[in-house]
Length: 121
Image (cartoon, rainbow, N blue to C red; front, side, top):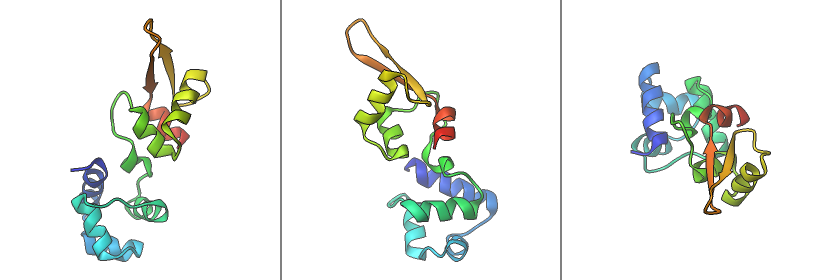
C-alpha cells in the first residue's frame, strides 16, 4: 500500500473516522476518499490541505516517510521542484534540508533530513 494511504488510514483510525465522515468534514467526494484509502489515488493541492486540516496533522504527515534519509526523487516531489533542482541545491550547499558529498569517483551522494525537509515544507 502506498505511504500516503497507510498514513491516511492510520490518522482516520486514530480519530475514529470513516470515509463518509472524512468526506463530510472535508467536502471531498466519497469516491475520491475511497480511492485515497485504498491507495489507488492521491490528493493534490487543496484536497491534501483539507485532509490534513480535518485530521489535525501537518501535510508532511502524508508526504515525508519516517526514515533517516529521504531519496532525492521523493524530496523533489514533496517540494514541487525538479530532481535536478534538488541535486544542484544540495551540491551547492544552499538547501536547508540536507547536503551532498562528492565521492572519489566523482559521483555525488545526497543526504536529506526528514526533519529539516518537514520544517522547510
